[in-house]
Image 1 (cartoon, rainbow, N blue to C red):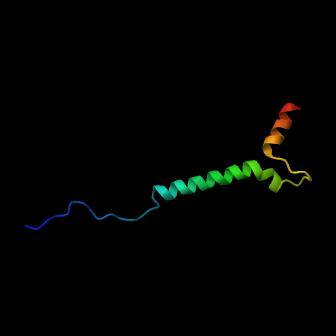
Image 2 (cartoon, one colour):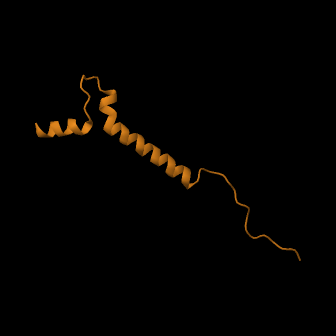
Image 3 (cartoon, rainbow, N blue to C red):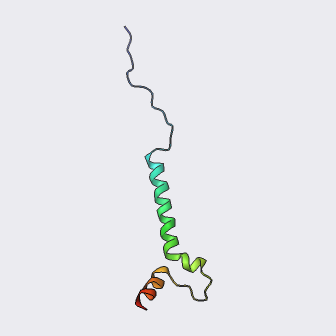
Amino acid sequence: MGQVNVNPPASDSGFGAGMIIGIILLILIVLVLIFYAGPQIFGGGTTPRSLIETLNTAVLV
């Protein structure tokens, strides 16, 4: 009697956990950069300010 392989061959399909985690980290990094540097990049004012400074000014006034 011959030997029978009970484990099916591994398939390498799909993204995998590493790719999914990498995509999530990339999205988080982009969101953080937009949150902190967004007003300086997209704002049309003469003096660029961060969103935190704008929020602090709005709260204090």
